[in-house]
Image 1 (tube, rainbow over the protein chains, first blue to last red):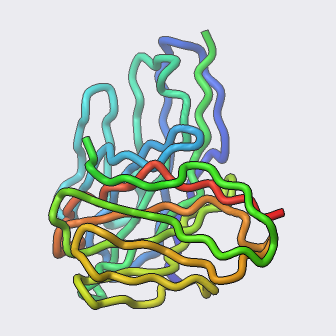
Image 2 (image 1 turned 180 degrees about the horizontal axis):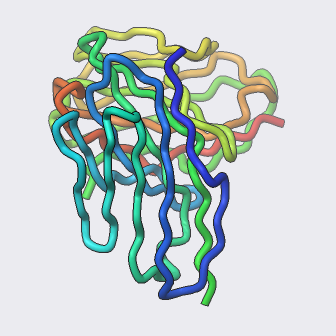
Length: 114
Length: 115
């Protein structure tokens, strides 16, 4: 069964600290992996997209890594800010159909305290 | 910045009422989607469209219906709302192929509460 599991479920850090969020997936055949940020009550916003051949991609203070062999990804946030408080969602796409079916994780709820 | 808009953002309606959630995008995307998301849970695909006059049901069974008469417009309708329909509904759109990593743009969501 194709699944996307994220950990931790929730995380609290102090402003200025770094953190790493994890995503493990079993989706096959793999096409790409995306990280989204979703503020409370808002729609998800894309942070990064990585295909099979990419193992790291950065977007400002966000750096995503991908190990397609172990089917693991991480999202590292550097020098956290209060505005980073949000849910971070890992989304994996398969290659099995023209739709490129998306499998969503439940997200990691990050809270940044001053 | 995503040019995809949903209305209403928040709605409280009574059981049995008919409701249409509007979704419009100005990016000319052929693919559009409706997702349902309960708090703290993953998004579930309930409808999608490849283009005008194309609509398909998603993974999660839904009593809602959709239409795609124009490229930019993808409304979702509940003929008779029930409390079990209380949820957040997210509209999204993308360029033709998501398989090669095209960005999927989401609207801000419509929070529906049925009392």
